[in-house]
Length: 557
Image 1 (cartoon, rainbow, N blue to C red):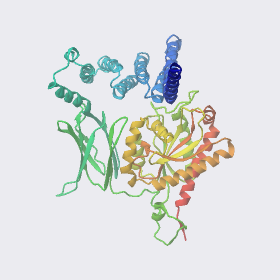
Image 2 (image 1 turned 90 degrees about the vertical axis):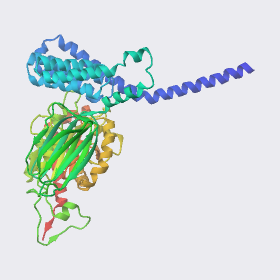
Image 3 (image 1 turned 180 degrees about the vertical axis):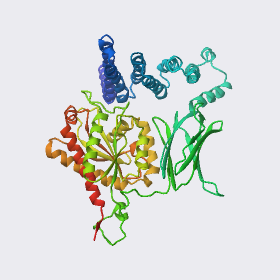
Image 4 (image 1 turned 120 degrees about the vertical axis):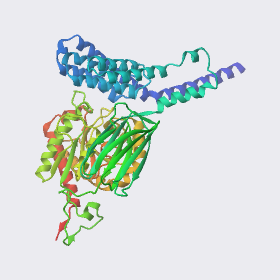
């Protein structure tokens, strides 16, 4: 009897243990599925490369780029997977090989870019050593730049030193007194970041300065107001940071707002950036990740554009109901900036048949411009050709040109091949995981960085036209869905959502981002190839903008 009881008790324990193990494996199934999907995509890219290398297609540049695109997609779709660093290295290596056929300097620049992306995004990966060696080889043998090659050799030595523990430490533990010193040295190497470059876009009353960094830093902003006949100055201290040996100490700009930008090593671990101003009414400084950069927005005395100068000193008749800011000020919408997403080296999302997001949105942007010009609007493109533009540059264009509206056009993509429909976003906190996923896709960033953006928005949204952007988003979404459903069945309305899109941060006008469909859905991908369907999308967007304009327009007596 005792034996039977013990056997039954053991069997119960075994059963409970099996249930626990099965449940744990079930919870990990999505992670394993994602990893296996990345492995499969990388394996398919490798097979395509093997077939390509043995064929006569090596003579054609388009075929090279098609194979390179396969490895790029592995990285952009699965940046957290184990094969992502391999895909980056293959991408860079193929660009380097392509240079031997094409002789184009641009192919070497792309190779260096992806090598650099590898050691910045995955600094602990063993492939970093190969990436640094290949970059040194390119600078020494192709670009004839011994200074940059020497800098990378130093970086390679530092990386090799800090990857492997000292030989003495392997033989026996180091004394307790020496361990704090070693720890501090290692941490200092890892924590100290580099100020690499400064970019700027300026107009008479607006300037955006972007400080490129090698990683996240702490920063303090100080404003010295004009006094004793001296103009105002804004200076930023970044720590722990050091200056790159290749950065210029002075940038002369001399526009209506910003005179020059100076940088210097203020202290051993502090870099100071000084902005000498001619005038200043407001400013904002914020940090963005992936890649790391510090963005400085400077605002002078804002003068309305031609489209905004619609005030009337006569008595006016206002519609009943809550008034927006535009209604209260009597403003009209005339100048619209259309932003076709992605472009150049950034192809955006890719369909199963090879359709590229950057091509679709550019066609829609051109068609939308035609529709809006018919309605009397002035149109400005952030890009009018297939060229890459940083996200912060697109926002700066809208602000410099004093736009009244900013509309960014994109195509969605999802791991769920059945996902479909259209949706419109405006800048705010993400309310669900799907919105975070879309923001990560369009920002080309990680979920961790999006968490930083959520914190950043707490300080920025007070000065952003959220209510106006929300109204514009609802008008566009409603008109777009209604127009599409007139001619096409099964158009899903995914509604209006909020997310922290980098391209919308810092806009001084109502701004939205429209996802006009899912390129990952085979059914919608076919539609996005159809010119008539794209014209319908453009017409729906234009009607939404016109609807928004009529709502804020003031009727005169």
